[in-house]
Image (cartoon, rainbow, N blue to C red; front, side, top):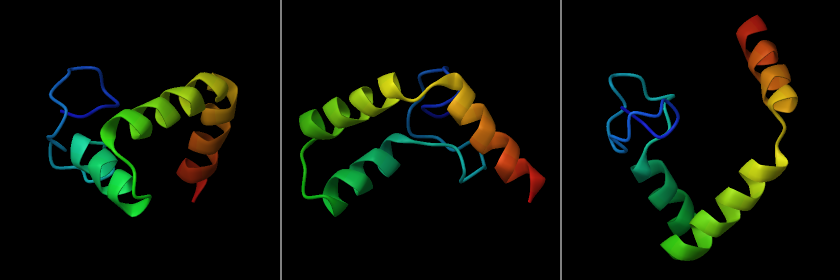
Length: 65
């Protein structure tokens, strides 16, 4: 389905473009002129620093719109 649901079918949005897929990571790497290794390293570092509470706050804010 996507990177965010956990099914490990990494490049299928399952009909919802808001799901994060491998193509999105590739486009972001291109936008920043980076390769896959650097892109994944930066993403891992960022994900380790974001707390569930921070993400939940952002989710609630987006749902309220």
